[in-house]
Length: 302
Image (cartoon, rainbow, N blue to C red; front, side):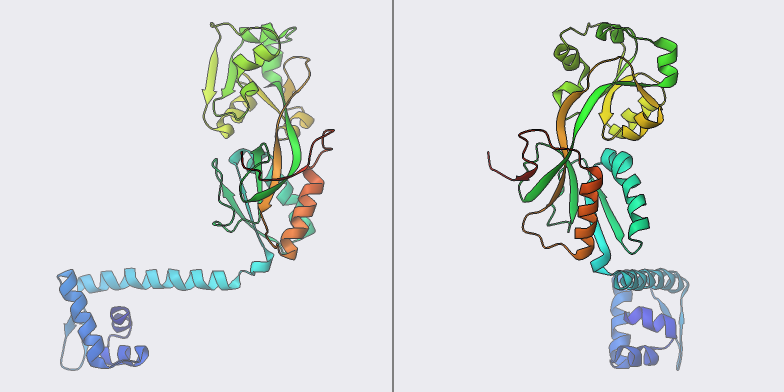
């Protein structure tokens, strides 16, 4: 700070006044910095100082750094914490399900601000100040209460052009004759083609054209681009099904899988803004719970 103030004022005396210390203290701190760096920062005259060439370079960088800190502090101060909603989820949920709904909610509550944390791992809700999380699985996570929104329902999907070129497909076995696409990090075993064929009472042969993806976004994009058939479905693909962008490759029943849950830190006291958004989100995204299904879950150690 002694260097920045001295460089800005071109005076140790004015810098000292600004920092509420003595001129000698400022001069000493600048000398210590010069010895540490190994080069001089100022030309010192009888009654004035000037920056050296490297001093000017360093002064610009230090000034920009201080200005960035000031700007960030002002930004934080201008953010009303009671209007901020921090949400944690995966890239697939955020892209295909959450963001379109947040866009609609902004028209309902324009004052709400959002902080979105996207991760394929489980984010610590308390450590990252998360208000709401949408997770996929069993609903049983430590440190969180969870409410079932919807279960995933998959079936073989492809785009219209792909279906027009290779279809129609009469049986499950017909699908093995065309390129199949697979999300290799799928949580549900039945989302893997080999298991899906088994669950449908047949066997997927070894001479099948198969492409796999470790990114859900890339996997979905490949299906949307017409590169093959993927095991997808509601709720994430609902918008594409309703618009006709994606169509079932074969007339078959959907296969229920695990569910998407709305989670909150256990024992949390959400703000009014968070509570309002949570209730709206639950109302918009929830489907009827299955018979015998406990829609509210708390972590139970195994």
